[in-house]
Image 1 (cartoon, protein in one colour):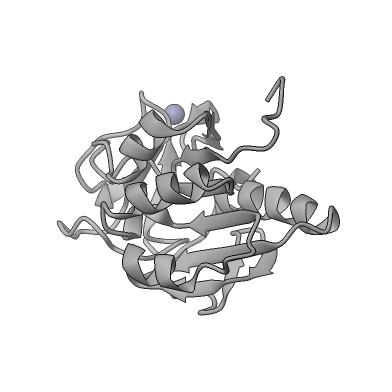
Image 2 (cartoon, rainbow, N blue to C red):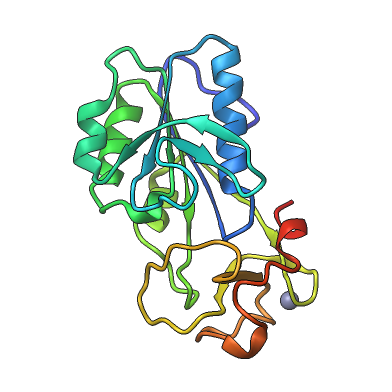
Length: 204
Ligand code: ZN
């Protein structure tokens, strides 16, 4: 961000695959705003209850208190009129209405920081994040490390057999993979699910 805007709102999107450090980057930005005594609100899609219902938690166990929401409308209703910075984690679990809510916030002068998966487990664009990327002022693609070959990874390889688009899980359910190592369909032969081998180091 060469020239930070002044007196207006904007939208920042942080996206990438599983284990790419999206939540960590979101927490870092929100913390800095808090240190600057800005009024911050953090929301998190409530579908994701992997670790904690009222905190944003990164895989490396950084955490930030947040408000769980199940819809964009609920988020809109819970916005504090005085808020200056709004963070949204796991945006891929929210309905398409989140795009309008983020635009509404930015239009009224709020800095909006949204983190989420940009691709699903088949490598397809995962709404609403791609649309948010289009209307945002700033996009940061963070990368994991491919758990097969060590290259930068931007895809989430599912390693358990399940055709549903949303399967919440961390270690044992997905692996970060690069373009070459990503196979699209579930890669069950990869390794025994539930064995968190290379995953900790991949959360760089
Ligand atoms: Zn690879």
